[in-house]
Length: 72
Image (cartoon, rainbow, N blue to C red; front, side, top):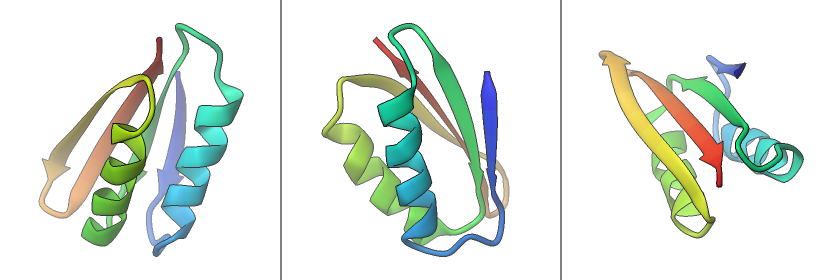
């Protein structure tokens, strides 16, 4: 699984990286993004809800989220 580090990236950079990864992965593949900005998480959630994907967003530490995405 690819892991994309978005530490320090402010909106819309994490969302753009998310959209790029969604467009490149194949069915059955997964990736994880690590994000440290809550506003990016809200925008990423909006993008993910529109796609045919399996995804989770977990706050693994205070202010740090892991977004795991799998294309079905």
